Image 1 (cartoon, rainbow, N blue to C red):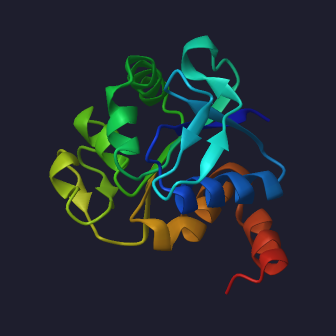
Image 2: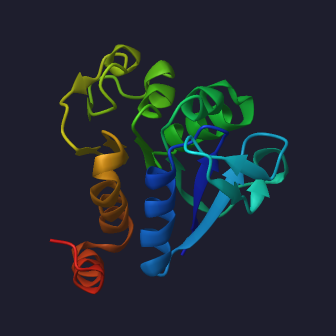
Length: 182
């Protein structure tokens, strides 16, 4: 099993990042939290700090199975400006490997032109950055290997959709029962 890399920058949306990391780890997945800033401690949009496992500049991502971009501002804008991350996203896209972005973060994929002709969702007001996408406004969209989520309220469904993509419906049902998810 590969590793899911979750990318952090100051101003990230805590519910989206932490829910995703927690649910995937409950599913037995290897998850690494990666900062795209020089500091290993990154501050969330609601002043919750997180100590990241790695820094984007000294990580080779050889075992990467999925890339996950939490939303929040200015976190998502900082992710979008990170050259190393943009190159990694393009490599993933060319290799048809899965990616997930929620809230404001689908703009990173949209600005790279990776959502053209795909169904996608994002935080209201960010649709303009999803170039060529069919913006549905749904809580979560999965189109091929790209999963997008609308915002903090859809964090659990977003995380479970990632688990389903990588581990199947049976694992999702196990998790839902264990976590009392309706």
